[in-house]
Length: 263
Image (cartoon, rainbow, N blue to C red; front, top):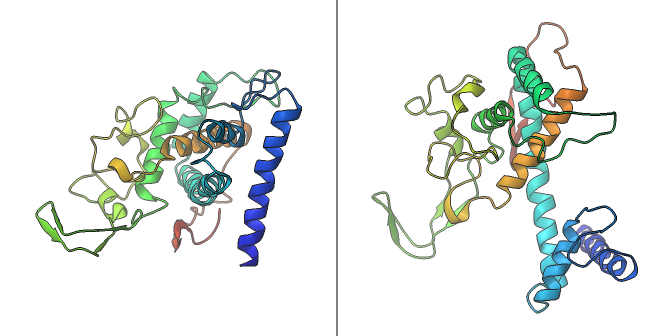
């Protein structure tokens, strides 16, 4: 209970500070700062609150922020760790990704940041992320759904009150769907993805973010976050295994699918 109260107070302070700064400096309430051209998530949420204060009250705003932090932190972190682990075990993939980055991203001086627009056309990097999500989806059984009434799905009768879990990991490794399903082959995704790196909605064999109306609303943000971070790690550091031993890929499921032995 104490942790919940502390977390709630921290989020409320964050909102109050953003609201206060919007009235005392040159920030606009729509989240933009004329001097920097940057936007903050909190101030964009406050702009929604200004348009519809009855719905977007502070509790709703805190809920949105909490969802972004809790649902997006571990899943994205695990995906980055898995991606680096797979690339270290496949140095030819790592080298190919580095070459693509060097040919497409122009870093003028130390401190320059890789942005979401910088990675849009990095198709091979997107292939690496998608292949990582295929082999090691952070939510291997997706989010459970509860049927509110009787129904039939794909010929199967689903009774009211049934909890349905989709084994995305099994679908991703189905040998009837994927060639050599247990191998890390980013090239299998070439030609599949759009500029944002997300597989088209029509595909039902790749479901790391779910599908349809219940799909993860943060999929696009996650792909950008993971893409920018991996790009920065690959470009700014030299990566190689210690000795000849392969990086351990044993899994550990604690809410999300992580590595048993951290990278």
